[in-house]
Length: 181
Image (cartoon, rainbow, N blue to C red; front, side, top):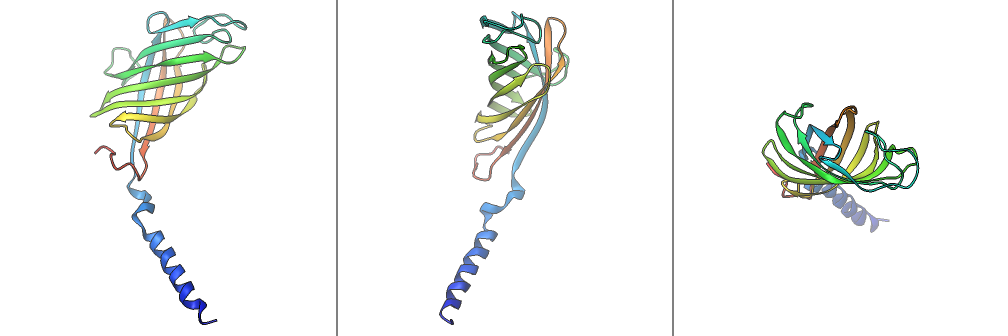
């Protein structure tokens, strides 16, 4: 029985060292949270490139099933389209529901905002009239190795330009030694 004690002591020592390791220090994670506004104007910054085959017609909030839509929209710091420019959102959506309200979206936000430059990429499901959540799947420039999510919420769905509030929640994991500032 006494021969097991040194092994147990060594195991407990290794466990204590692992807990004290800097790799487990989650208190120094770099985070950023922003709110931006996306301004999309049909047939100016957003275009249908493939007409859908079934379901509802085209409106400010709906497109027929199978419609492929591409966009390159300005991102600003306030709901007004004339507020400070922060970047662009570019990507595509494919309508995936017969009611025309849901789609699969892929987008890249290229940002030059608050001293940060680079892009973040998102992918996920969109509901055209309700808030939608997207995981951040990659980044470039100052956003290299970034993780997080983006929440897009409709603000104004009437008129020729629709506006979405885009809440960005980013963090750099501990292994991302290149986290800016």
